[in-house]
Image (cartoon, rainbow, N blue to C red; front, side, top):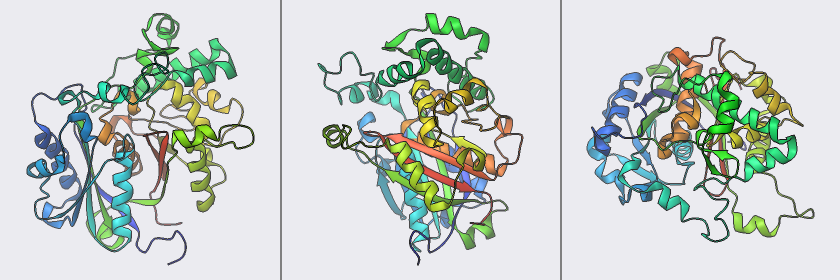
Length: 399
């Protein structure tokens, strides 16, 4: 095997999602997960007998249930099968995808089911996240997983008026996409004409980060089924191929001591993108990719991260938003699903990005399908202390 070359190619053959909402009082965790499992199996045209291994992930501490995968067996159908539980924070949905891909590429299994979910009203997510930050030093910054610092950075670089309008325009675009996605949690029917009023009246969380610009807490589950090349071609008419993925972690305590002109460090998003594109020979990601499903926890962060993910310079990333090029039908459609701002079942959120990117390649995204052919897709995951996972998906095995 050559460096970074898989032993076997891996394709997505099945996708299942629940409706995402603030509360799913009608089902317990196994029942909710089963909805997505059943949908994914039907989509793949297989049964649980065909699945060799189950990779299960969520933020178990948010719901205060230890080893939830054991209880969930009655909903996942994993009894008697090899099962791996993974928890890596907000990235967990992308991590279980990477694990499924690696398990099949290694030759250990032929078919792997990845399950991500969250049922947040059964725990105290906000309380758990907020306690990660020092209550004294971060009292004017911390909103939980995010701070208001990114709004400050963008305003400082591009001016208050332009920065606020770009952030809110991104938010309205995501809502327009969510309105086309029947599974989205938050879809308000926002219009561009409301931009100035929303900037003035929307309640602030911290600094210039407003409530409407922040992601939600959602209940829901997502299941993606992966197969080796031989099985994928046998079972699916249009498998979506996992070309490559990269995971980059950055520990805050470590980098804080190295943060100066002598020892600069890149953001994990930029570093991950640079490495991924370099080893895959991609010189212009904006031209190469047809769609990007980005883990966008807030509109301020999303606007700034577009520059890192696509290796853009100056204000090119702002212009993509201002010129509506990130909309469905634009030059670089971002989150046709509505993104994380619309739906955020944390343990599944990053897996939803991969599932939605795969649906776009298959042409099965329904009302939020991009009108032009999709051959190359990018999906990101975010979590922990600025961790990044990037996944490249392809329509054809031609790399």
